[in-house]
Length: 188
Image (cartoon, rainbow, N blue to C red; front, side, top):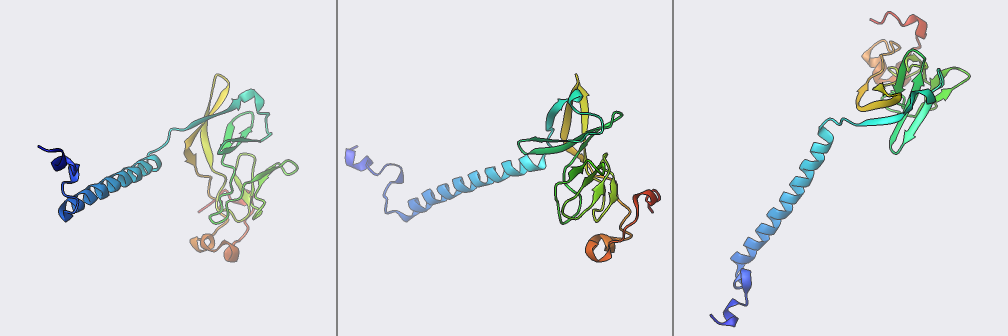
């Protein structure tokens, strides 16, 4: 076999349209396979439940009835030690269209939504305003004095009863009716 007969390598005759189509097909299939694998990896990452736990500090660092905003990388949580129970609250209001971060108002002893005015108790319970429920919570446990929060399980806040019907919830600006928190113990 002469050297000149083997110079075309894998493609054989480079002007052969069948070989060019075959190589293009393999290249396209490889690209599609890589694209499909990356999509599958993203779906797996977001579809599978995360057993994500974050340690927020020692229980002794959280004074009774003094909420602390814990912030670390992308995690923000309100930590509340009532002396009887530990509450780990999502720091965002539960309004369906406006998700502002609530602030602790020391003078009122309440969390307040600065965007729409909803108020929540120190434990995250709905008090009044346009939000449809109390603040969401996360489960936590104290291990060797350190608070560990499970971020994979969010517990929705209790409904507010301030919305008399689904129509009220759908159009909170037009149909919102205030019902004081003390008269909300008998939700239908």
